[in-house]
Length: 255
Image 1 (tube, one colour):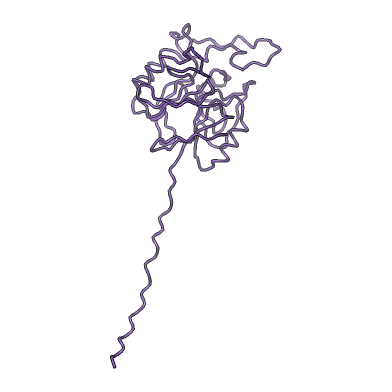
Image 2 (cartoon, rainbow, N blue to C red):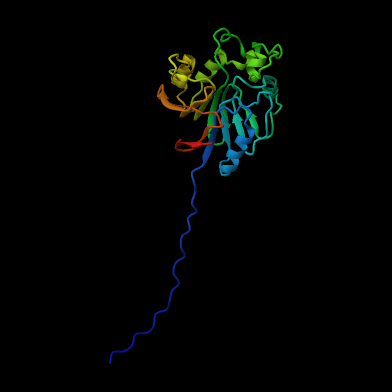
């Protein structure tokens, strides 16, 4: 009869290596808001894991009101803002808690990104004017029809100027370039007239940001311009985007 071997001690199994699942950090991107503040809050509630957001302008309501977003929101000027509020922000008076205005130029640090801004619209007759010399509104126009704030006040501070474009062209290592206007070619709603602005193509060619976002036309487009991915955003009540901070993968989501 063969001897029974001694029992070996039962050793504990090594603990399971628990590696936390690290989701890629994303930054949210919003198109024109035009006072749809409840929509923005709903989007931010839906994506509470997104730490901050950017916007391509036209945040104000038709009455010139702004709001306090649930998460930090960095925006550039559109053509329908309260430009007195933005002027005060440049002087150091915040627009609202968690609402940060990016004056034209840069670079700005937004989360892990270096960001540049060229907000406002292009007007040939005002393009060579110094930004500080753009005249403010002379007052609201009386009209029975509700007009957008910027048009009702006819405020020339809604435009960007040559000096600001030149300053942007000198910037390098920019991750995100935000404009309100579109570069060329851009045919909104399939129209035959190119609504894009050549000056923005020139800035893109010189700056070479990793990503360019614009608004103004309330139409989603995704194309390459001057070797740069250039995305036009819908109005916020229609869709928005999430962008991976490392890979710059963009995900468009319906509102």
